[in-house]
Amino acid sequence: MKSLAPLAAVKRLCPYCLLAALLLFVPVLSRAQTAPITVVTATLDAAISPAQVDMLDDAIAVAKKRGAALLVLRLNTPGGGIEPMRRMVTSILGSPVPIAIWIAPSGARAASGGVFLMAAAAITAMAQDTTIGSASPVGPGGGDLDKTLHKKIQNDLESLVRGMALSHGRNAKWYQRFVANAENLTAAEAVRERVVDFIAVDQQDLLTQIGKRGLESGGKLLRFSPDAVVVTPYEPGWRYGFLTWLLDPQVAYILLLIGVAGIFFELTTPGAILPGVVGGLCLLPALYALSILPTNITGLLLLLFGGGLFLLELYVTSYGLLSVSGVAALFIGSMLLFRHNGQAGLPLSVIAPTVAGVSLILLLAGWIVAKAQRQKPRSGLEALVGENATVRHFEGDTGKVFVNGEIWNARLDAGCAGCRLAPGQSVRIVAAQDMTLVVTAVVDAPATAR
Image (cartoon, rainbow, N blue to C red; front, top):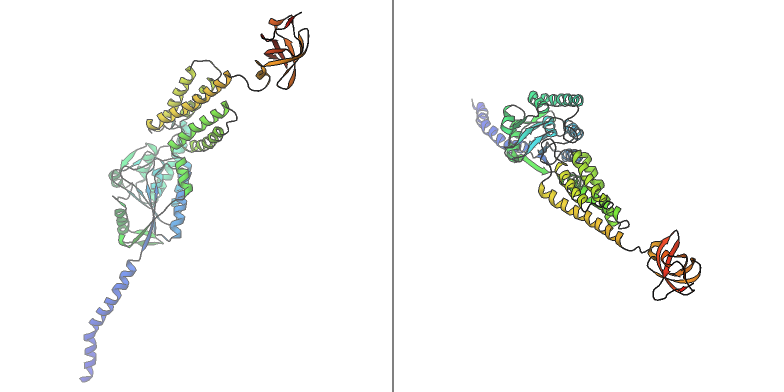
């Protein structure tokens, strides 16, 4: 019986050994569960354009390089062109890093092309007091498309958004209505209709809900707590900043008018150089921006028409009527330039000082030209009119005179017909015709009668 005592002692110690092993393993397990998860965040707060396409591609590349488990894109966009939107959708669907799109902050929206970005994202969320919708296609100037073309584009976009919504388990019918009927939903309505996944009041809440829900990563469902997340903001480079600045409607508008004013100034005062250079440097980027932005063609034509009226003022005596009409055309064109698809266009606080400043530049150029036209010519044959010349020899009504170091053919003016001019006598040049100077005798040096 004594031989069973060690066995009994081992049995009594086993629970304690298991407890010790468990206590040693818990910290290791805890460290494994709280391994840091990298999340890269980026912001798209502008209209969809080639600049945003490049930014998204770069953000995805940065997230992949840093080994991020998730890329969070905070979205606030009025939409944009179809082609840039499609390129962004392709980048989102083909991204090696899952992308969550969050419409934020409060008051933000995902309109037009932004709806398609939401449909393509792996995870979607909206902040409170945000909206989503209005994805119907419109023409470049905000007007309606041709009926056949509109139907083709609409069917194409409906099939695209429906396929993406179904692949992520969202309400495909509502996404189709965004395109077909330009419908809109609030954040609460979008969650209720399964258009987006959930409402997140802030970034911490967003990461908390994603961690609880789970994230598909590498074929596995990854769950995490916000404490285990390392958030790394993505900072776009100077190129994105410049393109975003250039594609701002207010900036494009101001550059356009400065460009028109500079070119006008150079055309009216040749040789000034600086206005032409500045005008060209402003006008060309502005035209690039207008080719991308949804521009109202009527507004653009009115701006160019206004510049033409100022130019016409130089050649037509209208007593300022053309200039006043030019200012009116600039103002109305500015009001219409970016007014499309229900958008308010440029604010009056930008239009008024810009039109006033450009009008003053154009009027200044016109005043300089008018003043130059009234001045006596300083070079060429006309510049000799009014000068005194010295007679070299004269026979009858024709002869030679010397002025400014040059000898010119001359003939007597009709009012001095019959005058006899002697060599060395001073005469006054009254006109210049066909390389011949018309002269008359100077009063203080009277000619002798024949």
